[in-house]
Length: 130
View 1: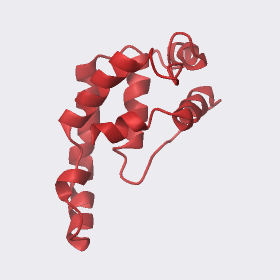
View 2: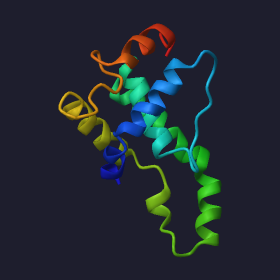
View 3: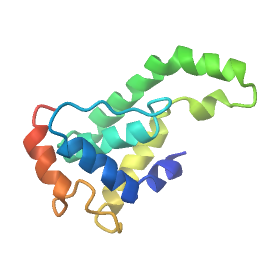
């Protein structure tokens, strides 16, 4: 599943990050379950604000407990769904972060939150409390 996370680093991710970081007030962002695209957005924002990989993984894994009842209920109503696929997995976010750190400068979308991109200044200025 981490490959899916890697595939989220695209022009749409630029738009999402620029929208959040450029907002003039607080922003609430979410997706259906709050673990995939939302988890990737959060991981990138945390990483670019200087948080460690361990911090990011711990933050991401909070979703596992927070979503447990909802995901179990969803899986019970949809037996074709594999609960293991939809449950947040520490390995996936670790692999994504490893990939992101190794590829952020090589990617055509490397400016997403990078020192060369427009988002980094906003992250450092608007999010120092993270």
